[in-house]
Image (cartoon, rainbow, N blue to C red; front, top):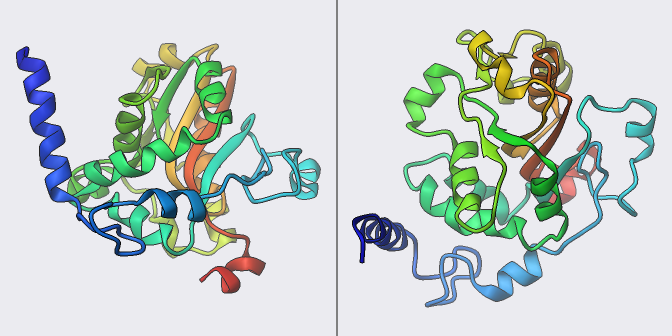
Length: 249
C-alpha cells in the first residue's frame, strides 16, 4: 500500500470513528449514521422547478420562474430542508463536517440528473464564506461537500478561490427575504486574477442550503459579470416555500 493510500485509509477510519454507529434518524444500530431504509424512504426523488428548486408537478419552470426568470441556467436540490435533514445538514457546519459530507454528498448521486449537471459544467466552485465566518468555522461546508462528491464521481475542474465574499458582507440568514435580495449587489466578486478561469465557461456553483436564492443570485451575477458564459447551481437542500414552512417544521 502506498503512502497516499495509507493516508487516505487513516482519514477514512477517523471519519468513520467520529460518526455515530446508530442511524442519526431512526436510531437503528449498527447502520449509522444513515441507514438504508431512512435514505430510501425519507429522501425520495421528487420533480423540482429548475428555476427555484421547489417541488413541482414536473421539471418545467414554475409560473413564478417563468414570469421572473432567475439569472442561473438551472438549480438542482436533492432534499427539502426539513426534519430530519435539517439537523444533519447543520452538522456539516460543525467540527464533524467532513464526516457528514461523506454521508450526505452521495445522496446527490441517487438522482440521474446530477451526473448530467456535473458533466455539462466546465468548472465548479463553492459559495464562499466571509473571511470571519471561515476563520470561526474552520472550513467551508460547500467546499467540503464538493470534495466528498468528487471522491464518489467525476467532477468538473474545481475553482475554490475564484469567487470571494466581501469581508463586510452581512450574514443573510438573519435577514428577511426582501433584505436578503437587497444585500446581494456587492456581496461577492471574482478577483481580477481569477477572471480568466471563469471567462467563457459554464460554471456550477455549489452550496449546502438554498433559502430565498439571494446568495445564489449574488454568486451568479458576480460570475456573469466576470465573463462566465452561464451559471448553474447544485444545492443539497431547499428551504420550503413560506406557505409550506409550517407544515414542514
